[in-house]
Length: 287
Image (cartoon, rainbow, N blue to C red; front, side, top):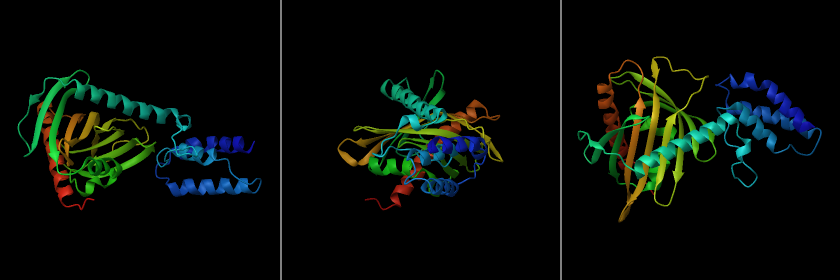
């Protein structure tokens, strides 16, 4: 009875709470504390699913809900959360299909020493750019920097002004908001679903555009969309201290930008990113 009452109260507050994107985890903690106090006055413990239920209502700052053993319980996610997870998995499958059955790649101009750029036009994606490079860092370090420490990326990548993780869905799916720095094509912001797959042979980090009605384009920015991004990290054969990086990218920058300009800007952004990442890893003490 108590559990049903609490869920009913949370449901009444749901629409109001989710319209407050600035509400932080401290507010969630306060709600949980109040509910826990209510329960303690009438029983010895609070049902474990209630705090998780409250967190899920908050959307942005809700972390994942876990079972006592730590495993993700799919039924605890909302239908929207599950749609993000499935969207990330679909993007991964599409990227794997491209990597495993490569099209006829056309070489682009060499933009960065040690990185090769090529492109192909694919159905449903338009022009996809592929950058390949070898970096002097192990897969684990790069994976950590590019996924676990995603919000720190603007510290070493000056093309970004802000990266924020809006939601963590389990261990392998994020909803993020990225804002670029000023560039020749203006400022862009992206809302993305990011998903990862770890195998013995490689780590795959994929991204694709997500829609959040409560988060409009930032002032002075155009909301762009990532059709597909996939960074594949593979240990270099014979040297596990180095990583072969393959990055697939297809982006709709939106706005009034000719395709010829987009086709120059995107591979240059990829090459610049590889350069920034090289400088970052050379300046970082790695285990």
